[in-house]
Length: 483
View 1 (cartoon, rainbow, N blue to C red):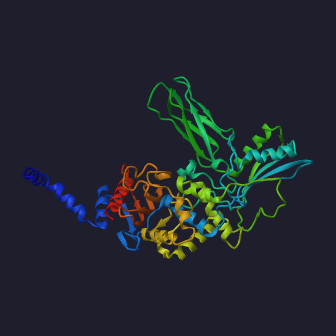
View 2 (cartoon, rainbow, N blue to C red; view 1 turned 90 degrees about the vertical axis):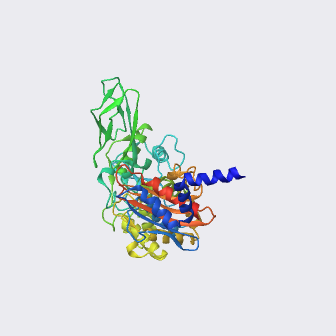
View 3 (tube, rainbow, N blue to C red; view 1 turned 135 degrees about the vertical axis):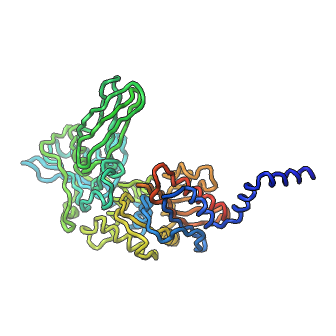
């Protein structure tokens, strides 16, 4: 017994810093824990964090009313607006999908109009099972063996392919692809670059809708310097740099005019079915908010309808899918607005989001949104405003279903690789956000005590080379373990 006491006393004497740190951890409150952990990031980063317990008490409050760029945290508000206003989200999506019409063409040869209905799930994949462009092509081929023009019509929404504040360099990428009521394959296309023999250009494979400028070279070994790019508005894919002989590369790029691309793809499908296309392939857009209602038509030749909208809302939040979020914002505006023509826009959707946040108790200075996905650098949210909103969501009849759309820490979605192996694995549901020196996370976690906490955390102006998410996650884990 004496030996045990002497050893224990000796440990304390030999490691006074450890003993002091243990005492400090036990004595610190959540506010001190958060400040201590966040300070380890070093200078430059601007932090905002609010954590509220299940009784509504703020246990952490760091710059609560500061205005922070939320990045993809914006999707929280867009998807919540759909739950708040649209209704019947678990039923087949009767207003989504796409339709085709045969209309007067040239002489006795009809023209084709492919009309998007504002949904994101139309597919041309060979293994497509539902909402397939092939179904529309089959319907046309069964009706006629000749068509004249093929028009891709996205006039259900106003032509706003990019929101205010979108960084121009993101436009050619899959993250910034054009937004259109006629969407096909997520408005993305793949460029496959296959190495040739050393000293020769690699082979570039891509849809014939695009052309390629290939100045790249195959090299015997690393380093790889291959670059695949496209200027905004251009159909020319630029391939340059060096590609090692054993390393093929696949790059996904965005499409600027999705309605035009969808019409071109339909024309290619019809040709493969033996249908002659004698006219031009083009797109029809709507600039005037008061014009071009596609509802003023006879019944279509064929319509494909997608699964329930709830599935798409889950994809938006779990995967942080930008295009789908932008389309959801416009649909919310169209369905909730008083004018189906004028409100099918970014502005129409934001009216709904603003009305929802006002009902939730947020003040006007606590939020501003220029888009539905978070790609805009104009978006702002105050941490306290985000927490006020999330606490209001929990009181709504749709609150539980909304929460189920969010990624789970260490389990799935954009949080699959975070919080794994910590006390918050499987115990945190939240929406992420990453953009231009910005990281965000907001949602709920279950603390060590079993109590549920609501939180919002934002890091803005993060310096190059600094990983703010690690610091953010560490702070939340320590806060949860202290409660």
